[in-house]
Image (cartoon, rainbow over all chains, first blue to last red; front, side):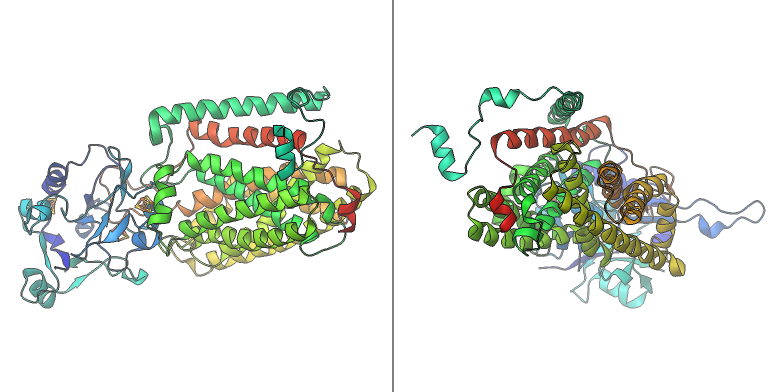
Length: 187
Length: 403
Ligand code: SF4
Ligand code: SF4
Ligand code: SF4
């Protein structure tokens, strides 16, 4: 069994939104501003001409961090949120009671309500679709034109992601909360 | 054996109870007003429930960024009331503090009915209440504060129902045992409800020890307000001597508890603002300058009742009955703010501008359906109380005074 994570070479992101579209397509995510598993943050250019701050105009792709110590899992009253064998945090729609506690507890705003099942949904690294079919890639990663995303097994020292994390500096978000995120931003 | 005898064997009901007695009451202006008010509120709630059953959560204004709304606040409001009544009534028949035993039956019945109203509200907020009942048992999430809170409240309700039955049967041994059980489980359940918010590591404004402790204190204050209202209405402000004595006592107690609460709140905000930590200090300052806090919580909920209770040494009973109305409005805002304030700071993790500009504060105002169900549930609660008052003898007997 694998221990999946994702590295993001975010400075290469061109905000084409192909990943968001591919995610919706692959996983059948409904339309609507609230309904997104992944997103790309857009920084507005700050400052007054001619003193423009071009570094502020950055793109930050993000999604569920697949926390190793996930607050959403800890607070779930019915174990609807659980860690699967691949180290992915998943939601079992049969057990979810839509108490929304996990949405409140997630420090990354990664969860939303799927209106078809009226249960909480989030990114699960394409576990129900691509991984279930035996593939080892995610939709967002395959589609990205500038190869921002590297998805792979953190436990395999020879995997592309492990090599990247050994050789490139990187950071994760809100690590002070002890969530141990498995999304890594390469600097 | 007739049905009435069978019921009487379990829990004694009033001899004069009949369908006719249920529908007849003294037609004073106040009574008529209360009747119209509660039936109106109840119909409003039913309308809200009807819309909810057709449209689900789309009838509510809750969002991805603000998933908990007025319904959660109202649930908290009702269960705080229940725990408060249970704690204050335990002063009498658990701790045997003289003068408190006379409220036993009425207070415990109030505790039962307020928690039932709370459950009624939450049933329309939880997306899948039936799944909840099943999977709470089949796959319990023992690290979840919601699991503990829900389970303990279930046990608590069982205990206080049994406590009431034995009180009504004048069986003071068993009622005391279940009273102790209800008190301990109720306090555990209620502080767990505080921890539902206190455990949120993602929300610095809520995270910490404050809520689990504050919940117990504010529950007791809520219980006192409700007792003033219940007895003010029961005796139409003309109290028999034992009740008057009792109300003097809880008037003093109210002044003390409010002073402690104001002290707690002072330090809560000082520690929150000090050091300027983001998502804590900024939120705290925002709360401190918001109308629901200043006028709702502080003025109506604490200052007015405190000034009256303190300056009169707890003896201005009639004024305190009216102050309890403002007090309960204040308590409502405490619950609403608790839920709303916890979610004020936007998470917006790197969502610097995706589908929307980053808001300064997450915006939420309840939908008309949320308001209908939540506020309407007060009508449900009053109607249940009216029926209970007709069905059972909730007044004290001479025996209660000596126990
Ligand atoms: S990012 Fe949020 S939803 Fe994803 S595992 Fe962590 S706490 Fe759960
Ligand atoms: S909304 Fe569903 S997944 Fe989230 S905590 Fe509640 S039961 Fe668990
Ligand atoms: S597909 Fe790649 S480049 Fe395009 S928005 Fe997504 S992460 Fe950025």
